[in-house]
Image (tube, one colour):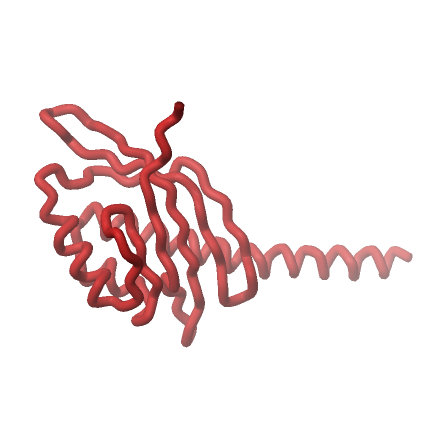
Length: 150
């Protein structure tokens, strides 16, 4: 009986560790995304996306599915007169679909300095991250403004 319990414990810990790894890898990509966004590094941020990633960020009206659209979006976004000074994930839920696909969704606050005052805008986000050739990449990205409370 002790041997069975030990074996089951080892198996459960192994499964937990296996699921934790994709979750942590996915969160690391999101952190890299936030750092590249603050640094206004177009090449770094676009490099986090798969070539055919589904891309529908906050201020475009139609989804796109290529890195050229992502590049054009970030080039324009980084020319904003009040660029982002901070990106902070304030809540999130992560769903591991497999060893190679993770969905991460939540709320991020993007802060901008406007007339000397930091103003934070909460946005919903949804990333699908996929592992390909050993690298985690963003396969889908959607973000939108939080709805106004009635």
